[in-house]
Length: 162
Length: 310
Image (cartoon, rainbow over all chains, first blue to last red; front, side):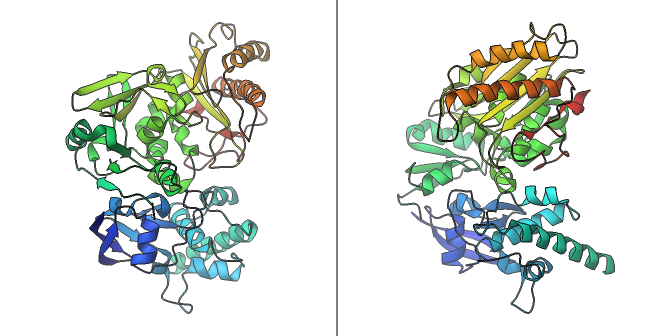
């Protein structure tokens, strides 16, 4: 069944034609071309499709597009305008080799953002719990944790000088 | 994209949702957080032709205190269950939610959805059994409240009728001086528990209950009052362990763990939960920091709330 929903995506109001069978991840990728939303498993395990929905992270493969009419969504695309303008979290991942194949990275970045917003100085244990919903098939967790620690330092440093 | 056509309904009030269920209940699949339903739909295991989303029914999103009980609306999400002050203070066992799934799952999944789905390894099930909780079902004709024993019938099978929804989960306030603890065994964080255990202990040990999940199609509660009447020590716990092993006789095996392993782990985790509720140290169990996502580690996650009501 076709229907139309209104969503605010990355700060822009959008009217989107969807099918009621469509999941949010497909709507973002196929209708809005936000291909930073990756679909790894479509069963809520891998977290590659993580987006902010009304301020909290969710796995967008497990939410029906028809169910987000009126909602606000933020994807990884909102964090940066391009390679020369990386968000401090993204830059920390680059600097610390926090990505190998890169498939899990958008989800990791957004889970990191959510974690650091609620807990600016997480312990290593808290970091590992914070990204428990994001799987890295390259198993590069060690450098991902290191990247998140670096991102926290960077964000706290910039907050102090603001 | 999900392969079958879906008629999607998202009513804005409980009355509308119940009217819809009264007229089309047989064909409607009720969607709350979708953390189990959507994966099944994506995989084609479940192919609903009509979906009723409760995500716009704000009446189901409240936590209230009523007649000495904490009433949690069905659409309260796990993250809120884990952090709500009323629940933390008066129904600490349900803060077991802090180990449900992962951050994203807790942000979306709901207590009502988890209960209605009735997976025998769900974190709330032993907690509800041990805490003496109840489940409220609503329909256009009214509501009824069932004990976990009445509500949960078999593996993913409950006494909910097609025209009903799970509208609330209620637990009595934990009396002063009572303590509770929750323990679970899982391979990795986020996975369903292999075995989980919830314990409730009165200060004078006039009530001692431990409920186990993962050892049969539904949670089993074991009354340990007699065994623990003289105190909680290893000898007494060994006797509780025997009762737990017997109560877990319906355990079945799966790829991860066979029936005997589950029964033996039920004993281990029942004892751990009781030790923790009794305030006894257990070297293998750390007391993780409070808050969602916190715990002692992936295996044997600790969700103690023993400090909450000392």
